[in-house]
Length: 388
Image (cartoon, rainbow, N blue to C red; front, side):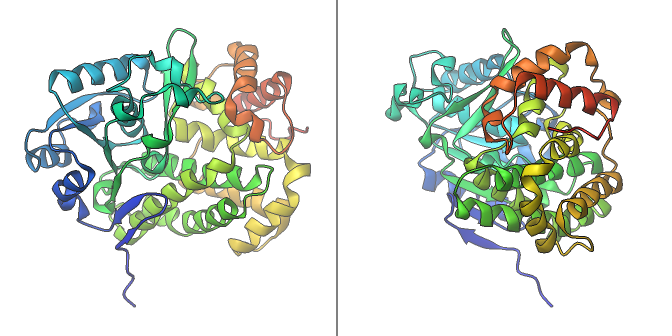
């Protein structure tokens, strides 16, 4: 049976999905109103064939490759300097979550006069922006994890405070997304696993977040089903285009769903990434079961639905929990934060920072700084029995 993995979608923005569609980048820029783009990409992709080909296909394009994991305000400022020096009129954000976030924020800030932190996602701060000063973006994800290509925000690290801040505006949504699975074929297995688990956590935390949002719930459930089916395949065979295509879709679905909210996993992962410079998706994957245990009494019914959607042999919370642990083992995800260089000495700071992270408010059980510190400590040493 032929599986169709190509299509044009218009939710939550215009998405051109399918193998080889990066060749349509010039048409995407034209449609987005970009005639002289700045390509913002990850430092590790700067010399890659995909970036060279993208630049060669666009007249007047320049490349800014000064983005690293956990992007900072300094990365944004350097990107802005390149944008203004080249008199560009739009951004092509090409890469993983860091490049996508940075590219979107560069485009957003290109015509603003206020400082970056004035646009943090707090109340109606987004209304401070001049909408006419927001440049258009074409987004091209090269990992299937963050889903930043369909987001209206960018996560940027304030190096002074060691806090990750969400910079938000409705017009930060990319005009066009090119979701080409061929661009993800060269990803190392561990990156495929970590970013794929990031997408799963997005879907799972969104589904478990309190509140009435059946649209987000439906997207989250299908995202989890796709990840359960295709992430092991993508890790087993990186050239499996069908698996890669479905994982890109699932990543976008996770970011679409989490407008409902996230939870304790992200609340902890953000400060851990800030203080220890860990990979965000990998951090989420490690922390997930510890937060699940804390939330156990509040998420049983929802876990039963997820277990049924995934057609697990054991239903309910126990069935899903066992499956999560098994999937982590299968993918080679570390069991403890200590294994990726995280120490317990900053536990109190992590707990306090997690408590004020916007994600904490979406946790199914209200969490205090002490609760989050306790979960963090458990994840460092590998103590799974964390009770609310």
